[in-house]
Amino acid sequence: MEAHERASPPSHSPYTLLPSTRPGCSRDGLKQALKTAHAFRQVVRESSDKNSRETRISLLKGHRPVLNGGSKCPGASSKKRLLLRGLISLVYKSLFALNDTGYRQAHLLSKVAFIASLALYVAKAPGKAYLPAMIIALSALYPGVDWAMSAIALSLIAGSAATIAALPAVLAGAPIAGLLVAPVSAINVVLSTLFSLAIVSPTEVYNIVQRLGGKRVSGVALATWTYIASCLKQLLESLDITAHFAAKCQEAYSFRHVAKSVLESCSFFEEQWYLRLRTPAELPVAMERSYKYTAILLLATLVVTFLGST
Image 1: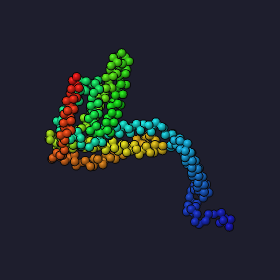
Image 2: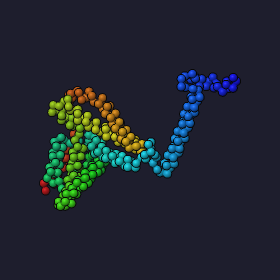
Image 3: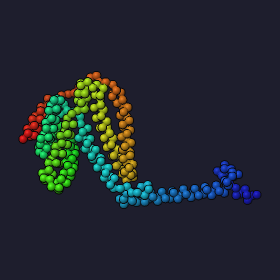
Image 4: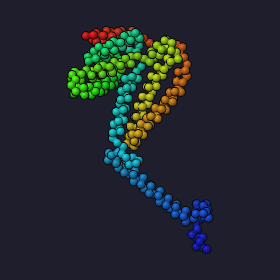
C-alpha cells in the first residue's frame, strides 16, 4: 500500500486532473504521450537553434540564408526588384514629381501651339535629332535637371527597344538607314510626349472640362492624376521597405506586400474622393500666368516648326 502511494503522483500533479477510469485512456499512456511530446519539442528546439546558428554563419560568410522549404533566396530577385524600382522612379519623376510653376503657368494657347509643332515635327522629320536637344535646353528652366535625366533615360530605353525591333528587318535585307531612324524616332516621340505632359497641369485640364460643361466629370482629371501618383509613390516605398528584407523573404512575398499596400491606398483614395466625384464643380480653379514662359513657348514653337520644315 505504501509502495502504491509512493508511486502515485502528488495531488498537485496535472495527472490527477485527468480521469484514470476513462475508457482507452490510462495514466501510464498519458505519461508516455507527454514524454513523447516533450521529446519532440526538444528536437524541434534543437533543430531551430541549429538552423539559426547555420544562418548566422552563412550571413557572416556572405551567403544568403536558407528560407522555409529549403529554397534559397535567389540573387536575381533583388536585381528584378532594383530594376522595377528604377523604372517606376523614372516614370514618377518625369510625370508626377512636378509643381504648377514654369511652363505650366504659360498661356493655354501657347501650349497648344507648341504641342502641335512637336507633333508636326515628329510626323514630318522623325529621323532628325534636333528635337531632343531643343527639349533638353527648354527643360533647363523647367522642369529641371532631375526631370531631364529621367526623360533621357526613358527615351534611351525606348530607343534601344526600337533598335532591337528594327534589327531583324535590317538583317533580312532592309536598308541600314532604318536601323538609325528607328531609335531617333522613338527618342523624339518619348521626349515630346513627356515634355508635353510636363507642361500641362491637371488643374488646367480640370478647368477646361469644367468650362466645357462637364461639371460632374471635371474632377476625374485631378482624381486620376492624384491616384496614379499616389500608387506609384506607394510602390516605391513598398519596394524600398522590402529591399531591406531581401535576404529574409522570397520575391513573391515582396510583391504581395507591395500589392497589398497599393490596394490599401486605393481604398483610402476611394473614400476621400467619393463626394468630390459626385458633386458638380461650380467654379474653376484660379491659376497664375507668366508672360515669360508664354513668350519662351511661342519662340520655341517657331524654332521647332522651322526645324521640322527644313
